[in-house]
Image (tube, rainbow, N blue to C red; front, side, top):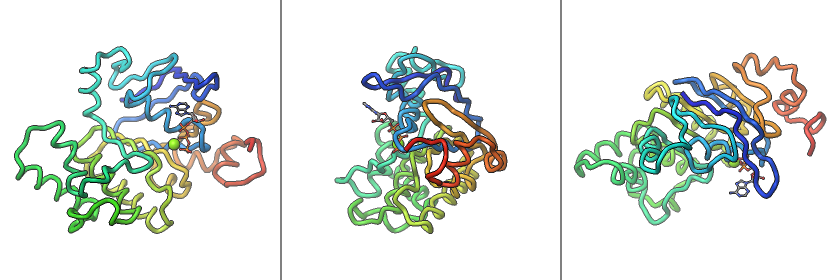
Length: 247
Ligand SMILES: Nc1ncnc2c1ncn2[C@@H]1O[C@H](COP(=O)(O)OP(=O)(O)OP(=O)(O)O)[C@@H](O)[C@H]1O
Ligand SMILES: [Mg+2]
């Protein structure tokens, strides 16, 4: 479904992605872990065509998205729902209007249909009754859920989550992880989650992949990952200062 082939990207002479290869399985949830500043968000931005690689390919359903014209890329983008790292809610719009935004932008449907779909997805993410609030009036966990609702509203085939639990307490993190699992069961999207939340990673991932020094150094099931012999993986998942990872 989604394949990155020998993807490389540098900023100011520094290689962030270095011949990165990975395949994301259809309808699976793949969690990508890795250090802060390691290029995880850069990788996601390549997948939705917000960044262009220096070399290498991004294939979505076999199509090289960097060979597409703007209009064709926009068509492909409709397959994606993205939950941004910082939430990226529009502060001047209510919760309702934030979630309705992609519908108004991409579909010509009646106001009644917009209302039905927004209320239905707000209920899915546990935000019923919050529709008239402004983003500044709700908690961080609720803002994340608004982001999830907005990403889901067009029933995307692919959902990208950039650190959906960062900045949340462990209980709210678990709520968000369970929400991702239940939304995945309901909508059956191909999911890619970027995360630092190791326990959440083992819970939500069908496959876990670790990005390190610009490449995927290990990928496998949560069980395989827990039993990895790679010293970098072992150090990262145990959260230790001691090991081969340079600080
Ligand atoms: N548009 C840009 N211009 C220049 N440098 C950039 C740009 N975007 C990212 N970088 C650099 O690329 C590197 C990787 O950034 P990225 O945001 O992908 O890290 P990350 O793995 O998502 O980290 P975190 O876990 O902290 O979110 C960083 O050194 C960053 O400064
Ligand atoms: Mg990031």
